[in-house]
Length: 281
Image (tube, rainbow, N blue to C red):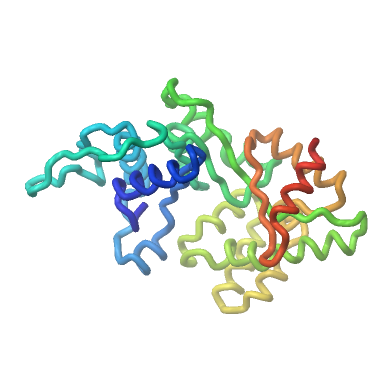
């Protein structure tokens, strides 16, 4: 949301919705200060207000309103300039493209529950989700526009259906370690890693501290190995069919409406999805 204007996001989403026959969902995230400031050269300021402004502008564009917006981070047309209020020339397939917000921090999650069509959490642990995010989801829902449908939740994990063998299960979980370590240890600065903060909130402070220290010291393999087995198990869905079926049920019980299947590069992703469908029929 810092690298693209709100109007560009809305135009792109409308075009993609047309190309897909009305099947496109717009996923948005604020990113973080390391990327926004280090790559785009913009100040990472007011991410909550920016999110609200962007979503409101997108929805106005899709409704083909003559666009005016006076927000905390965005004013359209730009005051004092030569711009005039405009509207989208084309007619969107739908007057409202579903908006999904990627968020894991308390205030961002509350905002998602208030204004978004869907929520995209990361590093989701079903048994701990309500303890970490429940109050924020309920607070946001209390402010939600009744015209919006109930919030959808798309959470996922590294998935492998294995033989009923301890070694096979362990090997499958180990294949998820490098990616988990990269997020928990290396995404963001030492003082601003939202994924690391989340793992601490889950109660895995030792994991968070050790993995971040090793990863930022450019020792990614050691960082991956430092993840505790209980944390890796909690953040993955790897095991024999009965285990995987039970884990998917736990996600459903935690309120997840859409399960995202993460697989390793080179893996047969479509086959993995079909395998899960077979298990849940």
